[in-house]
Figure 1 (cartoon, one colour):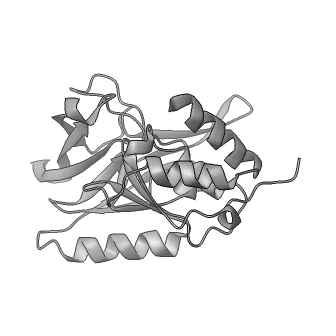
Figure 2 (cartoon, rainbow, N blue to C red):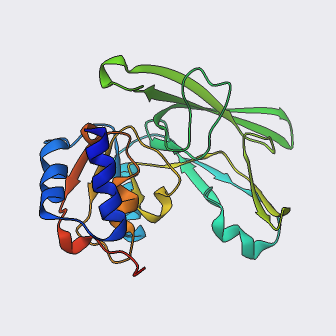
Figure 3 (cartoon, helix red, strand yellow):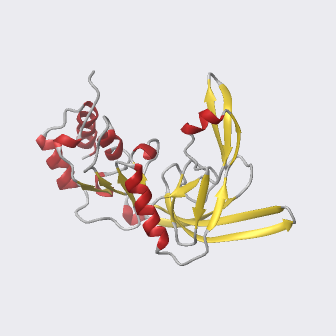
Amino acid sequence: CDSKLLDALSRVRKGQITDEDVQFFNENSAREPLQDCVNLFSTNDESDHHNRCMMAKIHAQIHPFRCVDSGDERAMTSVTAPRELFLKAGAQVMCLKNISGAAGCLVNGSVGKVVDVRVRVSEPERITAYIDVEFTDYGDESDNAHKFMHSFVTGCTQENEFSVIQKEKVVATRYQIPLRLAWAVSIHKSQGATFDRACIDLSRTFECGQAYVALSRVRTLAGMYIKNLTKKCVKANSV
């Protein structure tokens, strides 16, 4: 199935998807919506609306986290970490970078749930927040899934650093907790991430390559729940 998936994805990338490919994706992907997964939408409006609705359902204190930026502000558009991040205990989040030393496999695209937000005041002007997130590492098979905790800490640390490099030179840096809300993510913002499972809605694809990016974000077909996949929604640039 892996080789068939790679072949089908190659045709999606080229805009040469066949009726057999559509059937292959639909028959081998998850039949029911997956629990505790990321929803991939074609537009920011759709993903932002879904995140706001889910956040509003959680009756817990909201904690704002603002970034610290330096360098060329124009270069910040390529940084995946948000300027402002609002979190609550119970929020579903996505890790935005690979983090070594975690208790489990913590990579760009790992999805978890905020368990607690702890705020410590050590000096009148020094406030440190600890965000405890429970992640699930599915490994190669969902039967082998295990949960692990990771605590993110505010501050200008290497873990929170997002640098923009142009011509081998750092032109801008943002320090922000490497998380974003992740009940939903736009396909564009999912680029570079790898998900264990995702619900993919292709009903409003409008750019070349969107379907390919979405379908290639997930490790396995069994980890995808696909809505509205048709030959018409698969677009690619002319070669």
